[in-house]
Image (cartoon, rainbow, N blue to C red; front, side):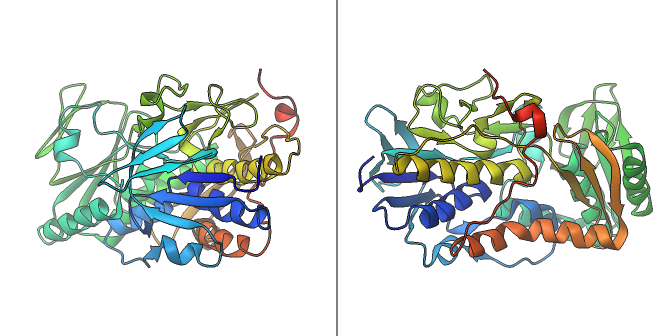
Length: 393
């Protein structure tokens, strides 16, 4: 690679931002240029979206400010097409095109409201601060009359949202609707604590039945029952941008970029995919979209590109899960520590120490970006042990 190598990072979420900042530090004095592209100039803390939904005011962080001093160029715009043969990206709004030698594909994922009828029309999501803010305004409207709220999806996002809403609006009746038991992936004691906390907050659990339709005044279940609500928050189902698939880049059935052991596209090796946008498979299974796994893919990719720029060899990506941190309102939390494949260990934390732990986790990306301007900071707590020493063929 030559000294005028052009690197473009698509997406400024947790992984894209870390990729850009770490790349800038790792490639200084090499002559490369780095451009970060994102539709909005606001950096979105996805780990805190449930707080916005509950009506809390959070600090607003601007991408240009986070990039200050790195030398990374920020371009505000949305990519509408990728031409992998010409190595060119087309931007919306007449913003023109960007050419690249290396592309970091970090477009992430969002909640999918297209799988269940009515979800796109009658449910709110946590896909952006603006939508979460609209939901918070709706909660304020119905709280005075003791309204009802349904949170659909019993994953950790749904659990956090239900607890946050119930604590912030004790006059509301909050129902968490889930096909599976909330906290099912946790150990028995941590799961029991989670259920006890939701019960103390007054959250009603409606489990074991699938939502088949979202209506203006409630959600319809597969068994025919109607759970009435004045507002619905949809947190289940994930979709990714179709940009890669539309460009002819190899993807799986869900649109995730197929990557090799070094997180490079199997069809276009000049494209590196990170975070939720990549189908990363290790010996114990495939990564799923979390900040915990996303930041390590960004760290690894930045280091990999820096080594390739210098003509050095790279080693396969290794990672193992370490914990499942879950906030239960502002005053309670549960932390389940895990094995590399995310099965639960015996150790877990609850109460105040868990609250402090969770807050540290939620705030760590911003701290990591700032420190990474000056030094290399690792986000990989576990490399997965023996299970990841040999890459999947």
